[in-house]
Length: 318
Image 1 (spheres, one colour):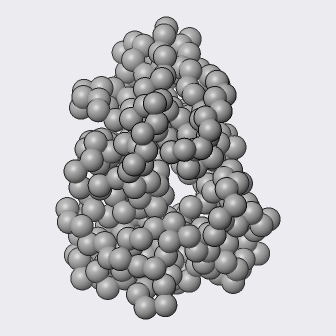
Image 2: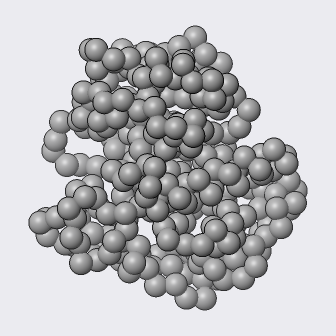
């Protein structure tokens, strides 16, 4: 990227490998009002030759979760399965962000599969663990669940759209607590930001038994030719996926098509973030977390997303 780099250092009271993971059995002892949500990093955007690193997290996801009351832990790619397992038992939920990696062969995909498997096992054992996928994260969850890439090209790059809610939306876990006027705004106004070329069509979803059995469709959209799923949640698991970008409205200020900073768009962002963070409250965690007493410094730089976390510059110390 050719944009100038403007570094702003910040700190999180977190450390990835500073002591033993808490016992999974301890998760059901009490509610946790200091949830820690992991955000998975990914390989840099194609063509990006940033001197600051080969992986990143768009800062808007961190701000999005923090604004709703979560502490955020950046999770690196290229770690071992043992290291990811240790992290899994030290966080209260995971967000798979948007981006532009290969969702079949990338290190992002490898890590996502590990966390997905761990989340299934934990929930099956009675240990609540929520997952959230945004845009690329939505697509990644669909590919992992179906064990097949069923995505199709759509003309949805940099457009704002209203949501076409299904009858299931009103009683869904995700939307049932949204105010009626906000649901009306989501249905009537072009306030959801879409920056994707690939979508899960309703046709491909309906033809795949694994996806139909696993996910409930909450909203759809169309590019004028193809109808695709824009919001879904799992039937039996606390897994949620949006093809649109709720984090962009309050936290990304690039002047380009597809962005919406209206009051309704910002409210939708907050309600989605607050919902997922509240899901993290359902994951009680031992107060003697391995994160406490440690500091993780990260670097914000200005580039495509306005700001991003560059993870190879993280300095961990306990």
